[in-house]
Length: 110
Length: 112
Image (cartoon, rainbow over all chains, first blue to last red; front, side, top):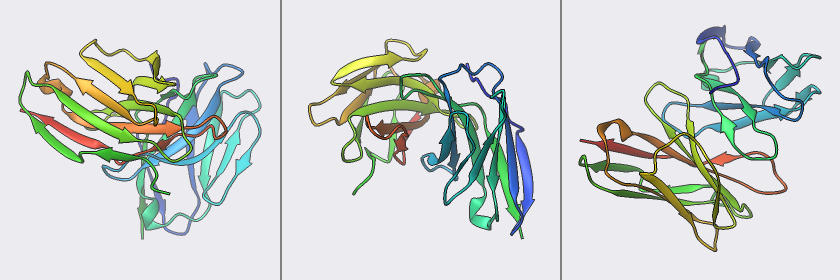
């Protein structure tokens, strides 16, 4: 069963920041939060992951609450190519098993 | 670096037949996982192979089986195909030093 809940869809204007929320209230202390995205019918693409600290890379930032029960993925300047389904995932501790939910469909509009 | 490659890209099979899907992991990766993604759903974990052994298994029947070869490549076999097995089958590889999985483009299986 999925360990995360996300809104089914969101819109964002091109050039603006996209903030995608995720709840993972049952996450265990040694489980990581991962974000992947999937552009239509392609394989999921890794974005970022974290355990308890905030993380930033060239694609996005990940903000994890102090109690680790929720997180937010931030795309700082969304482009039309960021239109995709975004999955917030919990990685089962000590394995590479990913438990996907149904994701958030992000639509970036001009 | 070729990344994760899967073959074939598309496949049509008849109900009751058997199918074999193939996956070559990213260079340097030793763990291969398989996922099934039905239309409109997120990927569902089937099983994972490491050191040629099935290490973990999701909630899939025994009709789904796999194999990993000494070069870390992997096969997914599905017997007695059902219409409900129609889906995108994804392979993901990972390595001990990099705790992120890389996915292939998938094999689209249609059962008629």
